[in-house]
Length: 210
Ligand SMILES: [Zn+2]
Picture 1 (tube, rainbow, N blue to C red):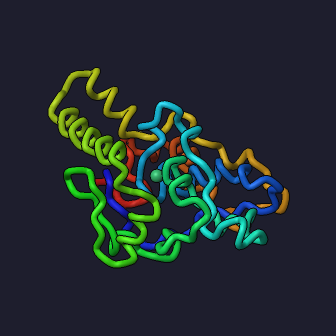
Picture 2: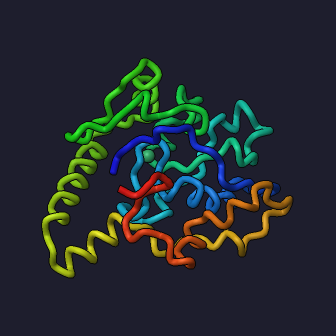
């Protein structure tokens, strides 16, 4: 549940031309599977849902104003990581680096570095802030409990917490002012996959189901 990606993320969408960078949010929600690229916290675990997440600039707006509304410079992050990182550039870029080679989450909920860049990444985004480590522990325990509990209530709770958000964005209805450079990505959106009955009930990101 807290597995960092084995591969650098390859963009599936390419919206262009929004004046306000926040307009890219529905695309980024889908692009990064409704979770923070830094700490892996999910929308379904936040009381506020996607309101607890924001559009994050890989290269800060202050240093790279020309990239402020460039989709390739935007990722999806929880407000905690976004605020911890401020306008510093991250030593690791989820679209360039294989994060799993640099960091992993231990069973006690802490993020452990496997490289110097990984440690700098942890320090910059405060990935071991105490409330977050404790919350990861809670999720590990809940997952273990729900997996041995077979009641309807447990199954419903498991799907709600460890499935996908109910409000998947219908990206085909959106019309970026300057178009979408990767139109083929629409068919891979979570909304379309759910429409086709291909979306698993439990979250598995874009990696093969386990
Ligand atoms: Zn985060």
